[in-house]
Image (cartoon, rainbow, N blue to C red; front, side, top):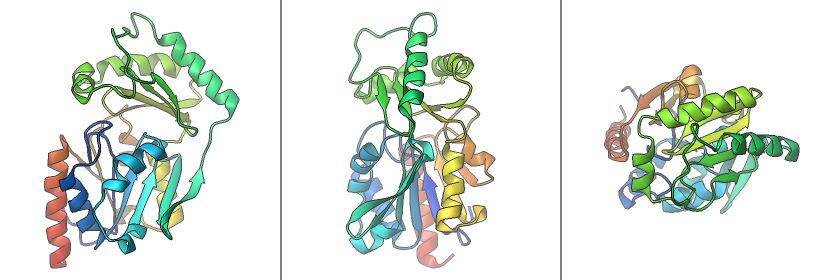
Length: 257
């Protein structure tokens, strides 16, 4: 991995930087803080801004003067925030209209039945969440324990079935598999590839200056559009794997390689 020409690291959140819906570990918070001393860093996630801020941003261990190098792109890149003057500034947001939200939610409710979806004995928190720029489904509920989420659909087969049905019902919208139990729905084209293009337009980086880390860089996964944009992508299989790779990058940046 040649990082000498890279100017920004971009990463997925759940399954890449942290366990699903869990706070960043102390170790990950430190290593990302170390990277921010040398290079810009952006997170693109299907999660809401509030969730990314609490789960990720508040756990990064770095002096405030380096926080201006950090960018958050919630809801699969449909919005972007930058830390400036001690607070997060919204750079853009592609919000869904109320009629769009109603159509998406109605379509979701129409597939939440067997054989497409088997309702679990217990739902933990919200099953459907309005994130303003995105509607998300969490098959076990937003607050389900991490071990249950990991076990529910490890090969994504259940969600591919749900996605196929939603693609028929709302073809004008983007339906993406994210997290470990989630489907994220935005306007067509409002995916992580769109987020990459907005990074290029808003921040001025070229594609070859970006390096992306994700755990779903497969067709149908919500990281896959980044690969289609031509960004150099590294698929990780665990949070520990990401930490190991970040440590290697830190060492190269410290050495000027």
